Length: 82
Image (cartoon, rainbow, N blue to C red; front, top):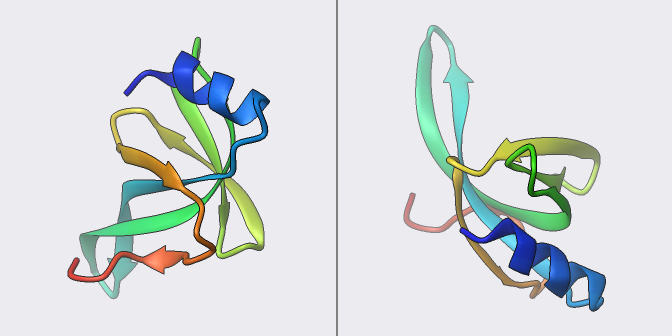
């Protein structure tokens, strides 16, 4: 994933969302979920992407956890089928 190109797209005011993996705790278990949230910013040198988690909190995602940047269609949350 080329964070510099994604930063350029955001700078050009393109609206994007990020599909990414994250660990979710369910009781004593940790499972992996795939989510999609609004992409706010990227920090290419640090390998971080910043998203609006549930449209409430800003969290960072490591580039290794990112799957793809998509056009923002306003649909967020857990990805269907995962």
